[in-house]
Length: 389
Image (tube, rainbow, N blue to C red; front, side, top):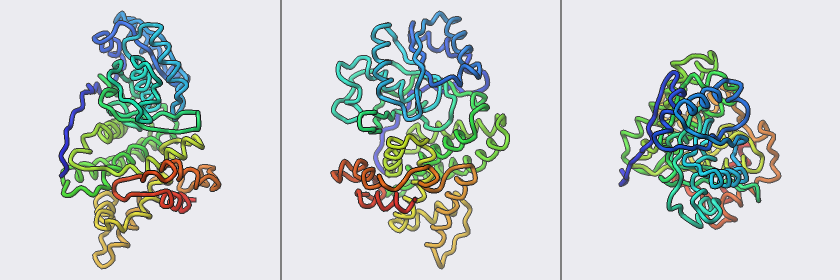
């Protein structure tokens, strides 16, 4: 087990009707907030009105900034920074999914910084402070509601970069599974894939032994496999949604990182897909992850055998462990397809003419390698993407 320091300071407020507490919670930290959200869905669902009523009741002033897109854009972050400075905003309240929360975190870091917030995402600077962030989660997926990370897309060159720093960990997050009842099923499936990918990025590690977190990750993956089909079959199944929503939070709050070094190559590869083609992050991961697995499984056949047996219930063929490992990878891909996710780049309408370009961008033109389980150069990444066509 690796040395580690674990700290997560996000206060989770979970359950039915908890969105009505947002004003009460915000007023403990700020007199004026930026209400940050995506499109019209929170207004159609009535959530916007509930949040406004709660803020007004608590005496919290607010200014609004909507328009967050999937794969959130740097240009809107810049706009948010300007609004917060002009209006004297003291807290960023994100109402939405991971894209909204990631955008809110970027704004929070950008407000007190004299340079361009993109400097943090390119590791040219480190934030000394940030405005506090709070969230009302509507889409279980990214885990950003209690994580220390954010991913932003810069339209200049369509570069999608992530940044991790404890300074952006939300103060509190409100998680009410009822708020997910009206989500489109494709978005549910993409979100579930993102959650499972966060778990698998951590699972495939060279750290050994890490029995406790291995077991926790396997249990959380099995929980997703049981409950995602229930949600898709009955969108108002509160209990199934509660399992999925809590799994998404636990998958990315760094508890399951403890004592181990995760891989994260698949996320790095997928960022190039969604930056260039603006596909849903989870859908891109559904294509990339099985392709990555088939490229690297021989590095630690035993780990893939365990994945197959413990997560997917594959019968362990002791005489042919490679067959067991490959059956587990296929079981993953079959499950993702069964919930409505793509299996190939073609199904995402991604042609093969930019594969070398994406592989080059992912490795900074060959200057670095992706991943920790197996280090991948641009030739490896190009091979993975070609195998996924």
